[in-house]
Image (cartoon, rainbow, N blue to C red; front, top):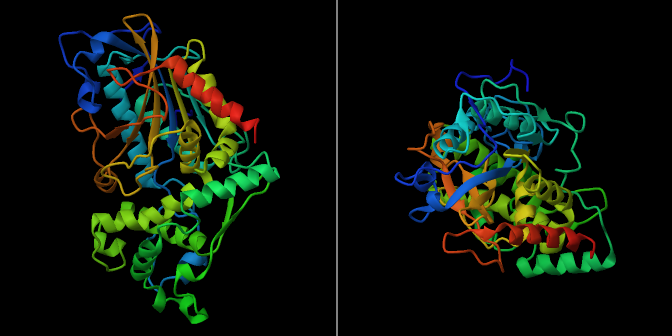
Length: 430
């Protein structure tokens, strides 16, 4: 990472690669941040952390003249960044998150402040898209502000790295039949969206929009369908695709626009209304990427990458930055139990959200694993709140179906690795 970008005062670096157990006579920072049983830090030492992150706040991918300008008479927020790029707020928030991890992990005894990480003990790797690379650089600057951290880029900027590209790489009649059946079992393409569509159409004032002149007044009037092609992401057509663009833009506008009434185009909306509006986009992502067979297909490369990181000799910290489709498909492929992120309007993959795969070494000499979703609350996003161990982001523990946690909520590391292996092997059965 260039020292010219995102460098801020305050440093932190990994200390010794040997595990350090926190003192037993004090509550650790994680027990304030994450719900841990009493004495947790006496029994376990954090050995490694692997993070799969979604990029932070970006501008809508659709620019002027797109469908967004046709389905509402209102003027959208004036963004500080080009379509699809990380916004100024997004960069500031991600640096804040990196600084929080610095303080939190130093308090845990996992890292030492003002130290430079030894070669190969840390890794930052991002998709080759501006918003993902910029997010990784901002987090690295917040966590390691005085270190020259390199963010790996494996393909030219503006192209999708195959590791992060949620594309179909295997296609057969059997796969298609199974994938479509799984989508139907989830509720079909338009699923539970009737009321959410109605709210979205009301907020957009779609009946007064330019599109209404062409009789486009409802998303539900256009049946949605999904198709799969080798070498391409799952593709959507119909009303849900159009509605997703609007849901995404409104969600991002709510994060950026300080005036909530203005963000809702003059409509007084409750927090639940905003969650319902964002839920259209969440459903779109689930339909395209969360069906089990589809998830195993599109997440195959990144599952391999994550497992390799968990097994990497000498690695202490790894940060991989991609997209909501990466997080959604990885969790679906691993068999995550259903969850809803509190204090968020994006309840599945909050903007800037991170899956933490934590490897612990127990006093008993065994290795354990823990999974958390860490993200800024909607208020922290809107207010650009200063994060600290006393004012932390949100943390939600994730559970995997069929795996039994011990009394401290941890899985045997070998059980998590086996789940990764099963998901990777399932790809060969498609």
